[in-house]
Length: 287
Image: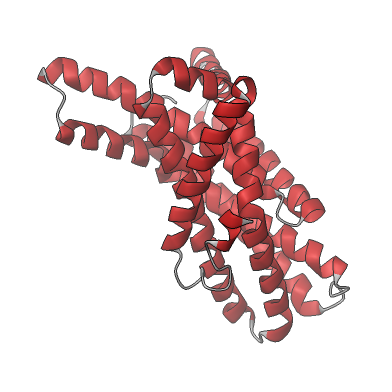
Protein backbone atom coordinates (compact mmCIF):
# COMPACT_ATOMS: atom_id res chain seq x y z
CA UNK A 1 0.00 0.00 0.00
CA UNK A 2 1.12 3.54 -0.69
CA UNK A 3 0.19 4.98 2.72
CA UNK A 4 1.99 2.31 4.75
CA UNK A 5 5.17 2.71 2.67
CA UNK A 6 5.49 6.39 3.62
CA UNK A 7 6.69 5.56 7.15
CA UNK A 8 9.30 2.99 8.18
CA UNK A 9 7.97 0.90 11.12
CA UNK A 10 11.55 0.09 12.20
CA UNK A 11 12.49 3.77 12.58
CA UNK A 12 9.39 5.33 14.12
CA UNK A 13 10.52 4.43 17.66
CA UNK A 14 13.45 6.81 17.27
CA UNK A 15 11.34 9.45 15.46
CA UNK A 16 7.95 9.33 17.20
CA UNK A 17 6.91 12.74 15.91
CA UNK A 18 6.56 11.17 12.45
CA UNK A 19 3.56 9.28 13.79
CA UNK A 20 1.77 12.57 14.42
CA UNK A 21 2.15 13.35 10.72
CA UNK A 22 1.08 9.79 9.85
CA UNK A 23 -2.03 9.97 12.04
CA UNK A 24 -2.93 13.41 10.68
CA UNK A 25 -2.51 12.24 7.09
CA UNK A 26 -4.39 8.95 7.60
CA UNK A 27 -7.30 10.82 9.20
CA UNK A 28 -7.60 13.51 6.51
CA UNK A 29 -7.39 11.03 3.62
CA UNK A 30 -9.78 8.58 5.30
CA UNK A 31 -12.29 11.31 6.08
CA UNK A 32 -12.22 12.74 2.54
CA UNK A 33 -12.70 9.32 0.92
CA UNK A 34 -15.47 8.24 3.27
CA UNK A 35 -17.37 11.52 2.86
CA UNK A 36 -17.11 11.52 -0.93
CA UNK A 37 -18.02 7.85 -1.43
CA UNK A 38 -20.21 6.81 1.54
CA UNK A 39 -21.50 10.07 3.01
CA UNK A 40 -24.28 8.46 5.07
CA UNK A 41 -21.85 6.34 7.12
CA UNK A 42 -18.77 8.52 6.77
CA UNK A 43 -18.27 8.86 10.54
CA UNK A 44 -17.68 5.16 11.23
CA UNK A 45 -16.10 4.52 7.82
CA UNK A 46 -13.48 7.19 8.53
CA UNK A 47 -12.49 5.23 11.63
CA UNK A 48 -12.17 2.02 9.61
CA UNK A 49 -10.04 3.66 6.90
CA UNK A 50 -7.69 5.14 9.51
CA UNK A 51 -7.39 1.70 11.12
CA UNK A 52 -6.66 0.03 7.76
CA UNK A 53 -3.88 2.53 7.05
CA UNK A 54 -2.36 2.10 10.53
CA UNK A 55 -2.53 -1.70 10.83
CA UNK A 56 0.55 -2.78 8.83
CA UNK A 57 2.90 -0.51 10.77
CA UNK A 58 1.36 -1.38 14.13
CA UNK A 59 1.45 -5.12 13.46
CA UNK A 60 5.14 -4.95 12.51
CA UNK A 61 5.84 -2.96 15.66
CA UNK A 62 4.02 -5.37 18.00
CA UNK A 63 5.71 -8.31 16.27
CA UNK A 64 9.08 -6.68 16.91
CA UNK A 65 8.21 -6.08 20.58
CA UNK A 66 7.34 -9.76 21.03
CA UNK A 67 10.72 -10.73 19.62
CA UNK A 68 12.42 -8.28 21.99
CA UNK A 69 10.80 -10.18 24.87
CA UNK A 70 12.87 -13.22 23.88
CA UNK A 71 16.11 -11.38 23.08
CA UNK A 72 16.27 -8.73 25.82
CA UNK A 73 17.50 -9.58 29.32
CA UNK A 74 16.01 -7.60 32.19
CA UNK A 75 12.44 -6.38 32.56
CA UNK A 76 13.45 -2.74 32.94
CA UNK A 77 15.18 -2.83 29.56
CA UNK A 78 12.03 -4.30 28.02
CA UNK A 79 9.80 -1.68 29.62
CA UNK A 80 12.11 1.02 28.27
CA UNK A 81 11.64 -0.39 24.76
CA UNK A 82 7.88 -0.58 25.27
CA UNK A 83 7.85 3.04 26.46
CA UNK A 84 9.27 4.13 23.10
CA UNK A 85 6.40 2.31 21.37
CA UNK A 86 3.90 3.92 23.74
CA UNK A 87 5.25 7.39 22.91
CA UNK A 88 4.90 6.95 19.16
CA UNK A 89 1.42 5.44 19.56
CA UNK A 90 0.35 8.49 21.57
CA UNK A 91 1.75 10.72 18.80
CA UNK A 92 -0.35 8.71 16.33
CA UNK A 93 -3.42 9.26 18.51
CA UNK A 94 -2.74 13.00 18.75
CA UNK A 95 -2.29 13.22 14.97
CA UNK A 96 -5.64 11.55 14.33
CA UNK A 97 -7.35 13.71 16.95
CA UNK A 98 -5.80 16.94 15.61
CA UNK A 99 -6.91 16.22 12.04
CA UNK A 100 -10.49 15.40 13.00
CA UNK A 101 -10.61 18.38 15.39
CA UNK A 102 -9.44 20.69 12.60
CA UNK A 103 -12.16 19.43 10.27
CA UNK A 104 -14.84 19.68 12.96
CA UNK A 105 -14.00 23.28 13.91
CA UNK A 106 -13.29 24.67 10.43
CA UNK A 107 -15.87 23.01 8.18
CA UNK A 108 -19.53 24.17 8.09
CA UNK A 109 -21.85 22.59 10.65
CA UNK A 110 -24.00 20.85 8.02
CA UNK A 111 -20.93 18.92 6.82
CA UNK A 112 -19.57 18.09 10.28
CA UNK A 113 -23.00 16.97 11.50
CA UNK A 114 -23.22 14.60 8.56
CA UNK A 115 -19.76 13.18 9.23
CA UNK A 116 -19.72 13.07 13.02
CA UNK A 117 -23.35 12.35 13.88
CA UNK A 118 -22.47 9.06 15.64
CA UNK A 119 -19.77 10.76 17.71
CA UNK A 120 -22.13 13.59 18.65
CA UNK A 121 -24.71 11.03 19.75
CA UNK A 122 -22.13 9.28 21.93
CA UNK A 123 -21.18 12.59 23.57
CA UNK A 124 -24.86 13.40 24.17
CA UNK A 125 -25.29 10.08 25.99
CA UNK A 126 -22.27 10.79 28.18
CA UNK A 127 -23.55 14.28 28.99
CA UNK A 128 -26.94 12.86 29.97
CA UNK A 129 -25.26 10.38 32.33
CA UNK A 130 -23.18 13.16 33.90
CA UNK A 131 -26.25 15.35 34.32
CA UNK A 132 -28.22 12.51 35.91
CA UNK A 133 -25.39 11.95 38.41
CA UNK A 134 -25.37 15.65 39.31
CA UNK A 135 -29.17 15.75 39.64
CA UNK A 136 -29.20 12.62 41.80
CA UNK A 137 -26.42 14.03 44.01
CA UNK A 138 -24.17 11.02 43.49
CA UNK A 139 -21.08 11.05 45.72
CA UNK A 140 -17.74 11.59 44.00
CA UNK A 141 -16.45 8.19 45.04
CA UNK A 142 -19.47 6.56 43.40
CA UNK A 143 -18.79 8.59 40.25
CA UNK A 144 -15.17 7.43 40.43
CA UNK A 145 -16.30 3.78 40.62
CA UNK A 146 -18.65 4.25 37.66
CA UNK A 147 -16.02 5.94 35.51
CA UNK A 148 -13.33 3.43 36.44
CA UNK A 149 -15.70 0.51 35.76
CA UNK A 150 -16.65 1.93 32.37
CA UNK A 151 -13.00 2.53 31.46
CA UNK A 152 -12.20 -0.98 32.69
CA UNK A 153 -14.65 -2.37 30.14
CA UNK A 154 -12.89 -0.46 27.37
CA UNK A 155 -9.55 -1.76 28.68
CA UNK A 156 -10.88 -5.30 28.60
CA UNK A 157 -12.03 -4.91 24.99
CA UNK A 158 -8.61 -3.48 24.05
CA UNK A 159 -7.09 -6.70 25.39
CA UNK A 160 -9.63 -8.93 23.61
CA UNK A 161 -9.41 -7.07 20.28
CA UNK A 162 -5.60 -7.15 20.36
CA UNK A 163 -5.55 -10.81 21.38
CA UNK A 164 -7.90 -11.83 18.56
CA UNK A 165 -6.66 -9.47 15.83
CA UNK A 166 -3.07 -8.70 16.88
CA UNK A 167 -3.52 -4.91 16.81
CA UNK A 168 -7.31 -4.78 17.05
CA UNK A 169 -7.31 -2.24 19.87
CA UNK A 170 -6.42 0.47 17.35
CA UNK A 171 -10.08 0.48 16.28
CA UNK A 172 -11.27 1.34 19.80
CA UNK A 173 -8.58 3.99 20.18
CA UNK A 174 -9.33 5.57 16.79
CA UNK A 175 -13.01 5.71 17.69
CA UNK A 176 -12.07 7.39 20.99
CA UNK A 177 -9.90 9.86 19.08
CA UNK A 178 -12.86 10.81 16.89
CA UNK A 179 -15.15 11.25 19.92
CA UNK A 180 -12.56 13.36 21.77
CA UNK A 181 -12.03 15.48 18.64
CA UNK A 182 -15.77 16.22 18.46
CA UNK A 183 -15.97 16.91 22.21
CA UNK A 184 -13.02 19.30 22.01
CA UNK A 185 -14.50 20.89 18.89
CA UNK A 186 -17.81 21.51 20.65
CA UNK A 187 -16.01 23.09 23.58
CA UNK A 188 -13.87 25.26 21.31
CA UNK A 189 -16.91 26.53 19.40
CA UNK A 190 -18.85 27.24 22.60
CA UNK A 191 -16.00 28.98 24.42
CA UNK A 192 -14.92 30.94 21.35
CA UNK A 193 -18.47 32.18 20.84
CA UNK A 194 -18.50 33.38 24.47
CA UNK A 195 -15.09 35.05 24.07
CA UNK A 196 -16.11 36.72 20.81
CA UNK A 197 -19.31 38.10 22.34
CA UNK A 198 -17.40 39.52 25.31
CA UNK A 199 -14.38 40.90 23.46
CA UNK A 200 -16.30 41.98 20.41
CA UNK A 201 -13.95 40.55 17.75
CA UNK A 202 -12.49 37.25 16.65
CA UNK A 203 -8.78 37.34 17.48
CA UNK A 204 -6.13 34.69 16.88
CA UNK A 205 -5.07 34.98 20.53
CA UNK A 206 -8.59 34.23 21.71
CA UNK A 207 -8.85 31.22 19.40
CA UNK A 208 -5.48 29.91 20.59
CA UNK A 209 -6.50 30.36 24.21
CA UNK A 210 -9.79 28.50 23.73
CA UNK A 211 -8.04 25.66 21.86
CA UNK A 212 -5.44 25.33 24.62
CA UNK A 213 -8.16 25.31 27.25
CA UNK A 214 -10.05 22.60 25.35
CA UNK A 215 -6.92 20.47 24.93
CA UNK A 216 -5.98 20.48 28.61
CA UNK A 217 -9.63 20.03 29.64
CA UNK A 218 -9.63 16.57 28.07
CA UNK A 219 -5.97 15.59 28.13
CA UNK A 220 -5.31 16.28 31.82
CA UNK A 221 -6.78 12.88 32.55
CA UNK A 222 -7.14 11.64 28.97
CA UNK A 223 -3.41 11.14 28.39
CA UNK A 224 -3.29 8.55 31.19
CA UNK A 225 -6.47 6.89 29.97
CA UNK A 226 -5.25 6.59 26.39
CA UNK A 227 -1.83 5.39 27.57
CA UNK A 228 -3.56 2.65 29.60
CA UNK A 229 -5.47 1.48 26.52
CA UNK A 230 -2.33 1.45 24.38
CA UNK A 231 -0.35 -0.48 27.01
CA UNK A 232 -3.12 -3.07 27.31
CA UNK A 233 -3.37 -3.27 23.53
CA UNK A 234 0.38 -3.88 23.35
CA UNK A 235 0.07 -6.65 25.96
CA UNK A 236 -2.74 -8.32 24.03
CA UNK A 237 -0.81 -8.06 20.76
CA UNK A 238 2.31 -9.62 22.31
CA UNK A 239 0.25 -12.51 23.70
CA UNK A 240 -1.42 -13.02 20.30
CA UNK A 241 1.86 -13.18 18.40
CA UNK A 242 3.49 -15.32 21.11
CA UNK A 243 0.72 -17.91 20.72
CA UNK A 244 1.14 -17.96 16.93
CA UNK A 245 4.92 -18.39 17.24
CA UNK A 246 4.59 -20.86 20.14
CA UNK A 247 6.59 -18.50 22.37
CA UNK A 248 4.00 -18.30 25.15
CA UNK A 249 5.88 -20.98 27.09
CA UNK A 250 8.76 -18.54 27.52
CA UNK A 251 8.70 -17.11 31.05
CA UNK A 252 9.98 -13.73 29.91
CA UNK A 253 6.99 -13.25 27.61
CA UNK A 254 4.52 -14.06 30.37
CA UNK A 255 6.25 -11.79 32.89
CA UNK A 256 6.41 -8.93 30.41
CA UNK A 257 2.73 -9.14 29.45
CA UNK A 258 1.70 -9.37 33.11
CA UNK A 259 3.74 -6.23 33.87
CA UNK A 260 2.05 -4.40 30.99
CA UNK A 261 -1.39 -5.41 32.24
CA UNK A 262 -0.59 -4.16 35.75
CA UNK A 263 0.82 -0.90 34.40
CA UNK A 264 -2.35 -0.34 32.34
CA UNK A 265 -4.48 -0.87 35.47
CA UNK A 266 -2.36 1.66 37.36
CA UNK A 267 -2.63 4.25 34.60
CA UNK A 268 -6.40 3.76 34.46
CA UNK A 269 -6.74 4.37 38.20
CA UNK A 270 -4.70 7.58 37.89
CA UNK A 271 -6.87 8.70 34.97
CA UNK A 272 -10.10 8.11 36.92
CA UNK A 273 -8.78 10.00 39.96
CA UNK A 274 -7.79 12.98 37.81
CA UNK A 275 -11.11 12.95 35.93
CA UNK A 276 -13.26 12.90 39.06
CA UNK A 277 -11.26 14.89 41.61
CA UNK A 278 -8.81 17.15 39.72
CA UNK A 279 -10.23 18.08 36.30
CA UNK A 280 -13.56 19.46 37.66
CA UNK A 281 -11.64 21.75 40.03
CA UNK A 282 -9.64 23.27 37.17
CA UNK A 283 -12.20 23.21 34.36
CA UNK A 284 -15.75 23.88 35.43
CA UNK A 285 -17.43 22.41 32.37
CA UNK A 286 -18.89 19.19 31.05
CA UNK A 287 -18.13 17.39 27.82
